[in-house]
Image (cartoon, rainbow, N blue to C red; front, side, top):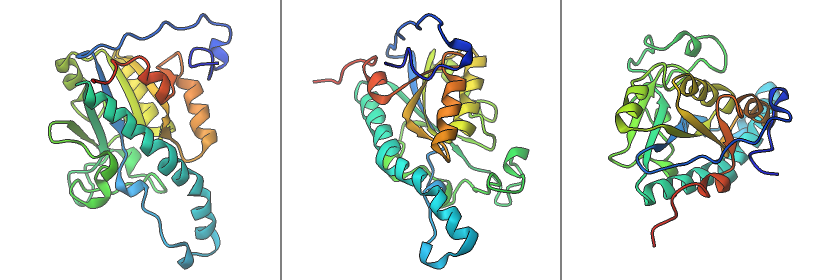
Length: 233
């Protein structure tokens, strides 16, 4: 089993295998989505009880996956892309006003998705282990899709990019919204399974099945690296 035969939804059972992607310098870019400090911040469980403590434990598998799988694989992707001179871009959620009045409705609704992340606060910054380098493009958005709320489509077009490799969080929210927008703009998209995470594995796997072979091809870090130019000696 490999990416060509796994993760197939109802729509693609028995369909022909997709072709190998051709990933060339100047045509392919890595887009790391919403890997920000706020999502790894955790309270001290010693001060929690009841529902708050139960919610803390419910999120533990996500944090474990982030530390042990997602962050290391994003580091591997960044190392290869940078090492062979391929473009790297980042998207992050951050509002321009401290009061957040410039946020889209989806980021102002009550509940977990009510995000107030002013652009200069530590919570809105990209995680230090995968921090952007000085000349890497970072787009700031107040929407789920990194295309809808920014000039990213124009930037990618100006760079000559035709293939976008997506990683980050959350698979079923901002990653999915971005992938679908990219596909609708006729970019060829690859989602890196083990460089992404959702709040639960069920949500992660389910969303990848929806995206695979329709809006993107989904593969692992190892599979993706096999299509990129080899590391320089």
